[in-house]
Image (tube, rainbow, N blue to C red; front, side):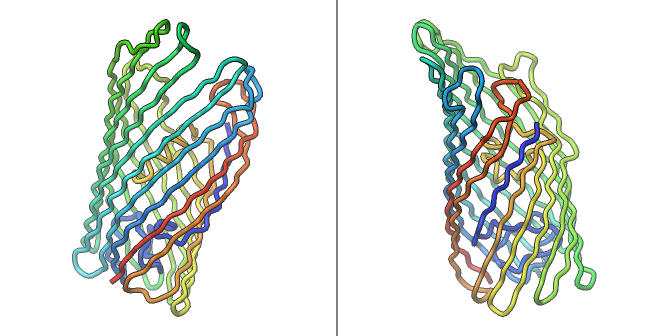
Length: 371
C-alpha cells in the first residue's frame, strides 16, 4: 500500500520547526537534539495550547457499505517547555499532555458499526547539555479505551479494549560549529511496556462478561544527523532521522492483530531568514512509515498507526516573527486544510485503493518568555 498525505500548515508557534545541527533564529523553537542547547543565544520558557479536529471520509465501495467509512478525531494538546541558553551547563525540560476522541462509523443495510476510542498521553523530559554532549531522559504514558459494537441484543458482537503503555527513552546528542557550518547528531534508545485488558460481552444479553489481561513490549533504536549553515541573515539545515531497529514481544494468544512497527525515516529541510526584527522560516519534512516523537503519541497512534514502511507523507510548516529576541511574546496559529488521497481499506484485503478526503481544522496559542 502506498499512502500519500500532504499537510500544508501555516504556523506562528514554537513547534513549527525543530533543530538538529544548530539553534533556530526563533527564540522559542524547541530542539530535537539534546546536544544543541549550548549553542543557543537565548533561553526561553513557553506554554502552548492547541486544538485539532480531523474529519476523514474514505469512499470504500465494497462489502455493501453505505457512504464508505467516516472517521472523526478531536485532539487537545498542552505543552510547557523550557530551554536554557549556552554558557556552562545548560538545562531544559518539556511537559506535554494530550487527550483525544476518535469515532469511526460504518453503515450497511440495517446495520451500523460505531467504534469509539478515547485516548490520553503524557510526556516528561529532562535535558542536560554539558557543552560537548547532551542527554535527554524521557518518560511517557499512553492509554486508550476502545469500544466495538455491531448489531443488537440478542445478537450483538461487542468488546472493550483498555490499553495502557509506559515509555522510557534515552537520547544522547552532540553539536558543534566549524566556522559558519554546524554538525549535529543524536542516538535514541526507547522501550515500552504495556498491558491490555480485553473484555467480552454476552451476545444474547449484551452484558459484560469476562476480562483477560495481556502483556506487550516494544523497543526502538534510532539516530538523527544534521548539517547546517548560519550567518546573520540566513540559516539553512538538512537532516535525516532513521529508526534502525524495532522489536515487538507479545503472547501468542494476544487478541488483536498487531504487527511489528515499520522502520520509519524523517528527512527535513529548514530555511530561515532574519532582517532586523523580522524573522521568516519554513520547513519541509518527508516522513516514511510512522516516525514520530513521544510528545506526539496520540497523533501517531490514532491517525498513522497502520502506516507501513512504504507509506509516506509530506508536512510543510511556516514561521513568522516580529519584535525583539528577548522578553514576553504571544503567538498563535490557525489551520484549515483539505487533503485528498488514495488508500487501501483496512477492512478488506483486496489491494484496491479508494478515494479518501481529510479535512483538518486546528488552532493554538503560545505564550513565551525569552531571555
